[in-house]
Image 1 (tube, rainbow over the protein chains, first blue to last red):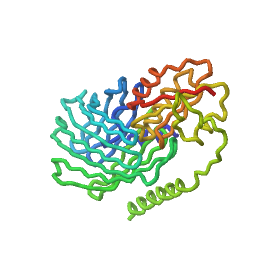
Image 2: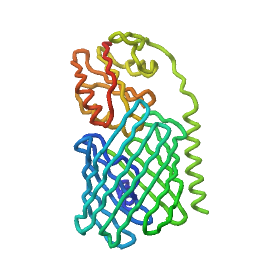
Image 3: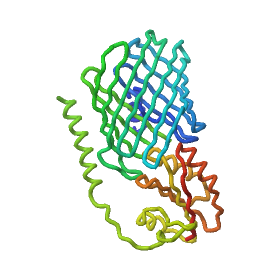
Image 4: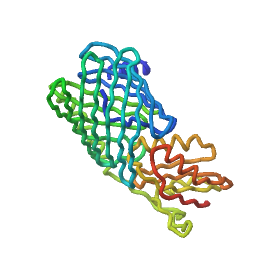
Length: 198
Length: 135
């Protein structure tokens, strides 16, 4: 029953800002759901500079299913005693359709503050799409290792299909290896992101 | 309306969690191993946390590692997983607040600082200092 619930959650569950590269040898399973697409994405980190993954997406605009192989490369990382900054190059090629995407994403994070951005160009979905996202977050309390960690966030995104910027609140919760992120906007409805790192 | 109620409930739970964290982190201070000088420097760890860590240990060596970039639970979890696979490590403590990792080894173990630093790097983090002391 538990497994069924997890699978349902995964199937119900958009590209967000979950760390696209884990620790060496680490696996990450993500599930996303937005007004544009539902997808499940698994990646493995063989080296701290890159991750390899497979993504299965149901595009809600073209109503088609896309499987793709994904590669994420860490372009730059800067660690300090209180912060981490990352810049990633993300790419993907279709396995069952002639589709591909490439994008750039980055984040800067302390235990209290988070700033992230992404820009992504997608082609071959029956349409082309360029999307930009920016996310700002603050942790209302500083949890210790193993505690429930909470982020109150605001995300703004724009793509060239709608050509309209939408901004909405996002709640991020994570504990142990599991993360859930939920955003809501009256125009695009719920944006859900689930992640499990193992 | 349902959505507003749901969001309200979520944010209420967040702030009650925040209030819980603001309350009491009272600890007693017993044991003074943390006051030892290690390689000419004081041991840069949270005293209470260190005392709790060594309380159940006997005849051990402890490596106190200062780490940069350890800002989230996921980073810390990776460290625990990585060192958890090292059979010579008997106990691990990760302190997000101070960016410190404590590792316990048997007293007879040889501690390889380069290996520790590489394992930390494999988690995307940097090691700035490793202090080793004998219990």
